[in-house]
Amino acid sequence: MSAALQALELENFLPYRLSVLAQLVSESLHDLYAAPFGLTVTQWRVMAALGRFAPLTASEVGQRIVMDKVAVSRAVAGLMERGLIERATDRSDRRRASLRLSARGRVMHARIVPLALAYQERLYEALDPDERRSFDALTERLFARARALRDGG
Amino acid sequence: MSAALQALELENFLPYRLSVLAQLVSESLHDLYAAPFGLTVTQWRVMAALGRFAPLTASEVGQRIVMDKVAVSRAVAGLMERGLIERATDRSDRRRASLRLSARGRVMHARIVPLALAYQERLYEALDPDERRSFDALTERLFARARALRDGG
DNA sequence: TCGAATTAGTTTCATATGTAACTATTATGT
DNA sequence: ACATAATAGTTACATATGAAACTAATTCGA
Image 1 (cartoon, rainbow over the protein chains, first blue to last red):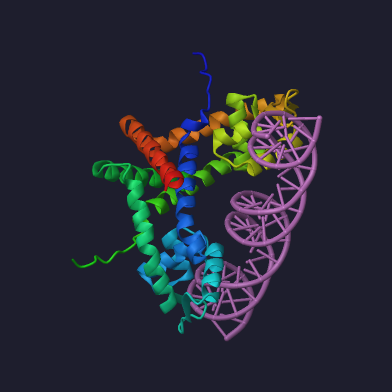
Image 2: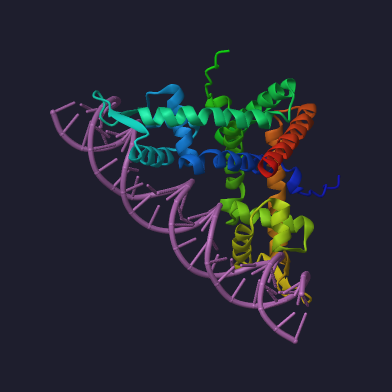
């Protein structure tokens, strides 16, 4: 049995394709709220998590949005400084502090959400409804597989 | 007509999902060649582009792998330092220099490619062949759409 | 109950990345 | 031919990110 020569066609290589697509989309979205609102991607994600699930501790935020605790800590510091979120130390466990959007944060959140959804909508116009559902399901399975490979080997 | 309240469900938000999936895959792949071979993701991508299409100028590399010229320049500097690629200034236009893998670079490339393809294969096990084709086609269309939105508005 | 281990979160350091300014070379228009 | 613009690539600066060390508080176990 002769060994097949393997060639790597970068443009057809799944991890590469995912990376390029995600980066392009991420950059576009970034333009949507970075310049107008002065937020980084990680800060916006923290706000989005709090907008939906507050109150959350920093750890819980990290679990929700798949972000490590250092990144969360830095994003929270920046958002606190600008008065966009509020922190309240847990009385029964003073290591923990629950976070929520401030009034200002809620205003900004309410202005960004429609922009983000509109962008998603325009992106999804590339697919018909069946294809959207299909795409979402496939990404979900790839994600689960990638996590299994990382964790279990 | 009452305005519908819009909610952003981050975990169902397409840009977010793409970002998290791409990052997870990218991290896994990174473990595959970063520690063993001491390459960054950008360096590996430059090697992959040269392994397939050499000789290329730095600009051409950037176009192939969707990477800006500064990133290419830095990756090239690192790869030159380690003797993994070779540079030859174009005689008819001395601004340009064509790049190719060195003998050492080809050896390393030949060792990494099977690892990368094996990882892709294990990832793709989450999908059956029809689904793979479908997924690839859908990502292609989303990419085209994202680029159109960025460029054209 | 007291020391070790765990957990939440922050700080530090080294590295990576993006933007803009810069150098060197070639192309263009008059 | 010569000033201006464009192109290839590098450097510099500011900011972002990841890994590991660290602080503070709590839990666990002998």
